Image 1 (tube, rainbow, N blue to C red):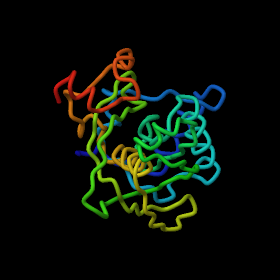
Image 2 (image 1 turned 90 degrees about the horizontal axis):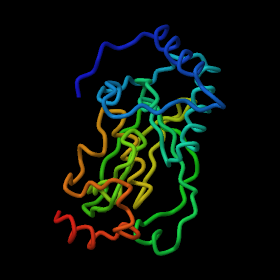
Image 3 (image 1 turned 180 degrees about the vertical axis):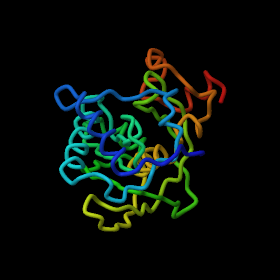
Image 4 (image 1 turned 30 degrees about the vertical axis):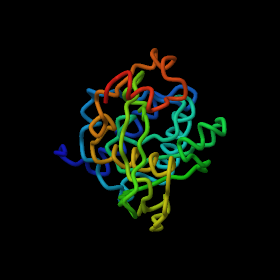
Length: 214
């Protein structure tokens, strides 16, 4: 994706401080498709923010993710073009749905400047949604096993393997930092509005494929 002119540390600090100043109960608005920040290559995080401001930003991102509710949130989704995301999936779901999604609980963690690559050829195919594209879901083919290289807030470099639903979450949030939204990779004929979810209990793929012909 084409990137806009990079902001210097002072401009980024002012931008982040301004967004956080508008928070209500520690929550800020999530921008929606059409906002240009979602289509930019986010800047690498290289300690441009004062430590306390970074801590406040991560707290607000985490609270905003919980409030949505969601399982991940990237900084561009609140208008900040930095390669930072927060992730967590500890929601209770039934065993059948968990097995269908290959879903295991994902404890809270943060990723800075992440990249990922597939570690196998197997694909996972399932419906996916996005907090920046409210009310819709669509089927996305993704690698089922990946390795993600990223840094934590202290700058420690980490390589971590993920599979199944965890791998999908990591890929989804990392894609945001490159200006990519899941609909760019989706089978668009599978797109459904969430008001129609009752037609596809559990988002059973074969039923949706038959009805929507994708």
